[in-house]
Length: 246
Image (cartoon, rainbow, N blue to C red; front, side):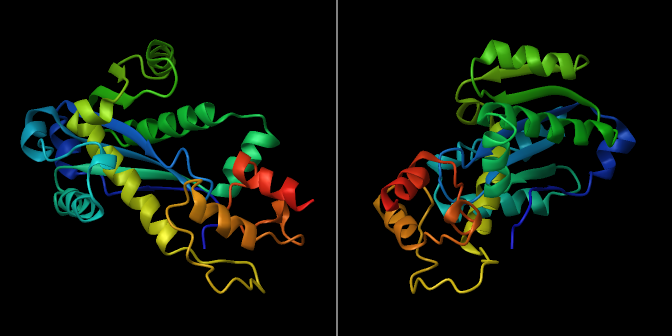
């Protein structure tokens, strides 16, 4: 069960460390809008000289690819681990809500922090990152300045729809999206005595009718936030149902 946030990085490609080839890196996120499940951030990187060969035009914004294609493209990255590195940062639903309500850290700030952590993790390994591409969160120039202050040695490009313009960002988007999909699909409830016969029929977690009905069936006064831990309990749809229930 996902009870806390975590970070995963693939093994750093040895060839990138030994040759010190200049590398390109992309970052993107998945799961900003859902009321259920984690928010995930992906990073992908490779040598600039092999970029077009390794991360080709098949890599597009993960939202424009079906599940099978996303899985296939992530597997291609995994199979290329001698040349391509990747990683994910997954924020648990409970951490998202706690940081937002208790710590007054809004979602954009959480996203910025996770992105900076992923980039820093890669640079610390010794990979020669020269270019960083990021899909913007908030105003692009303001975000670029924030990243430039953290990474003054790298060229930083922050743009809207970067996941649709730059395949390295698309690859990161796919890493994030596939990770989130797997976590949500394989969710293990830690709470006992959950009585909903359709407990696992919550869909994508976006605040649609199916998710709303699931939330209404799964309000439990004995739980923190009155919901199982899969729920971002501070999200407006969740709070509205609690309010309606009195």
